[in-house]
Length: 491
Image (cartoon, rainbow, N blue to C red; front, side, top):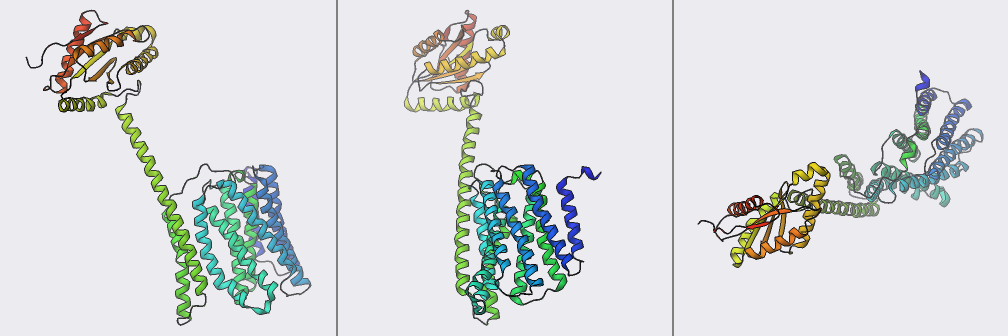
């Protein structure tokens, strides 16, 4: 039964179980070995996952694995310095490993995100910068400024102490970008996210304890350690999962993601951080604001980023409006176009005929109307098949349209019947035009036609009826001919 459970799930379950046991181990080299073994297992799982699943861009994953390994090495050095050498000095050798782990993780995440978005997810990047700016302001107020004012650390100590929250901000920015970017959100994606959250939670709680001189106690320290261990285990399981290959794949062309309520709430909360800090410092300092310049810079930065995001949304609305307008135009054309021949359909004809009659009445010009009917079309279909019949209709429509004037209109009336409007043409001129069409009728076919001219008073239905009567006479007379209606309407 256990063999049916995927390897990544077994690794995740075993790792989380071991983390629970870690909480109850006494402080000893065994406890540190337990921690290091689980961290090493996570790094090995990452390497195994890369070799087994073979992602398209393995460099990013190897850099992330290197970052985890450097962090694990820093933990080992920290234990040796603190517990064997009993050296509490700062900076210490383990800081090098920790800082290298940050750099490798940031570069690996950046490569992964760039390949995922192919440099096109600008909306996700802007959103992540808004969130990161808010956290940067909080980090400066509570973590970085106290370090900058602590002259006892020395310049090197200040730089290293400030490097930690600064690099945490970069990791946080990568996490925000990952969460706001397009692409699949599969199990591997969620596990990578959990890894980053675990490391950030551990870092920020540890930094808080260091800056406030708060002693979290044995249980608190263990919980911070567990946050890092959860990161190791989740990242190892993410690499073992087959879906890890999809995280770094490009997601397609650029698009601006919809502004959902959850995203809007998150960005709103981020932009309110600066005024909240201003209010808090003014309240606690009795009107004095210690970080006024930092808050101003944060407000301006987030304001410009919000304006940028609004500009992107406006462009999205404009682009969508253009798409909708184009689609509406296509629908209008489709509603007025015969799908087989590409000619105007009956609906378009019903609109065109009254308009042509109004122009003829206004300009005092003639208007001729003809109805064409392909001869023996049913027999042609039965003999050659319906595909050949469709081809005949298409070729006839294209040929007739090409041999008529640009002002003339030919439309499909229904079945094998077509109608033609000839503005400015007399009855004789219209008959001559139709006779020319009979000579170019494709595929050896012929047609019969009836022609009538508008008398200036009758409606469209009466004009069509007179042309239809002329067509009937053409069929009765043997087909393949043009008949004209010589009867004056109303007489």
